[in-house]
Image 1: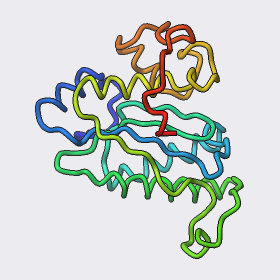
Image 2 (image 1 turned 120 degrees about the horizontal axis):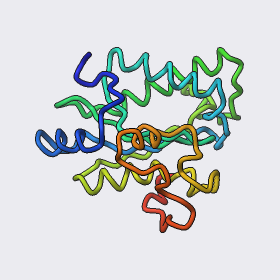
Image 3 (image 1 turned 180 degrees about the vertical axis):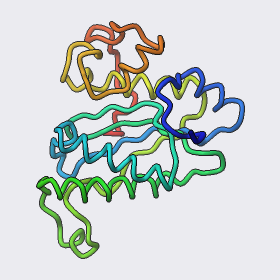
Length: 197
């Protein structure tokens, strides 16, 4: 398996040791939002299209997903890129493009598009841009991963983090990074990434 291949046993602590030992600036937090905040990412077709798009892009542009959560109209993820590679924009452009193709093949609907978007050949599936934050150190990465996992609670979709099925939280519980009762409505205290959504 390649250095950045799928490794479900990869824990936060292992990622941080590698991150701190060898470099800084190759672990990133992202937010991507659907066009017009259309709520399709957690549908069967949406999840399948995203999974296949990620698999396809990883073949030529490797990366590791450190943490991820899918919400109906947006996703948050922390990605680790290979040494010396910071081209996350190409990865997200390709993932969004592959997703859009697969989504449309399954009959997925698009939102209305402006004349500007139409002239550029852009579809009405994703917002044009995405939010990016470079994880600076171990505390910053931990904050980003926690934010990802508590996000369904923040949006009022669940009362307990463990009740949201489309999150890497469950993998982290199996690895012992969180207890299964981590994060509930009484524990959540703020919104560090208010501008990311």
